[in-house]
Image 1 (cartoon, rainbow, N blue to C red):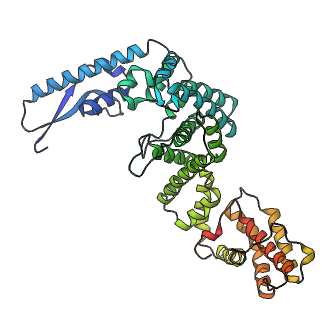
Image 2 (cartoon, rainbow, N blue to C red):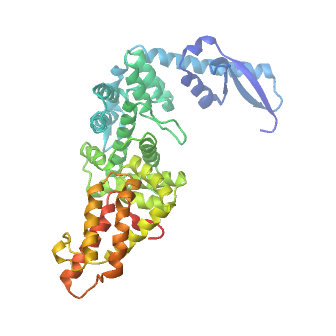
Image 3 (tube, rainbow, N blue to C red):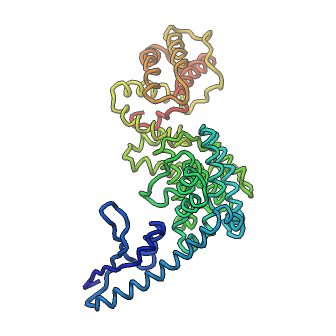
Length: 434
């Protein structure tokens, strides 16, 4: 635009009774107008547009005002028509709206959303009231897709669901969850805050990911028509940012059980791996070290919130002298058992021949009693540190790879058990310096 001429137009104040999002969407989508706000952020009955070159300002203004008046008259009609009946009454019409040919209609997706959301609500220990909200919000969540307003302005899905739910007498909690189930809609968008809203947002994305992967519609290098990368990244962002400790393995299993098509074990694996790659991407954006991310994702990638906490904790711990001592001792044990055909049985204390073996066994038992799969890395380090000296003494005085196979296997089994203490916590072999 070589010679922009800004113009301020006006529209009738009665249209301010329409939802703000409707007014702004009409301005931006159809006319590329800029809304005008008052000092408190309230919309004013004005808009700004820009003409190119010298124009008759009054004529251009009048023309633009006529256009937006017609657009707002349509929006007012849609609003009045949609609010003349309860939101629930729109739900049956979802049967005529196809989600995906093999996965059925939006009504069928809505029914899957209900079942999966209720399961997630139970796993996440929502209160009885919270579960009731989830059930009702899931029932209504997709109903606004067949309202006149959302058919015309698809970007208002969820937003209009909230308005129509409130207008229909639904509780504010249900209305909020309906709105929040579409969040985040794009990079940088807000995240759901209420627990029911979080549950619905997770359930909706899991259903889409599992179902669409099952029918072979996973994203290609240059094509992602169902925006599954965005769905997976949104799911990761919600779980990690809202600190929701959901294990995705049973969640994907439950979503698979609800699909109208078979979901193979390979597909379930692929969905988890796909989400895992989005989690890795998200953690890299948090400027965490790549080796730390790999070490954590190898053990906790299926629980993004826990993985995020662990990665942040580990990134700080690796800088400490204590951690490096632990890593060095752990690596001595880890390197010697790696690639060895270690018998799948516990070490037998009766076969120990040297005092250093017995001391290491005793230290191992004490550490094992303090270690559990869900613990933090710092707690794991504190439990493992007493093993450092016995490990060093063991390697200084005990020859592991002796000719006697029973003795050799027993010593390898002891070291393997020490290495396995980190299982479910962090894969230390992925760290620099291992």
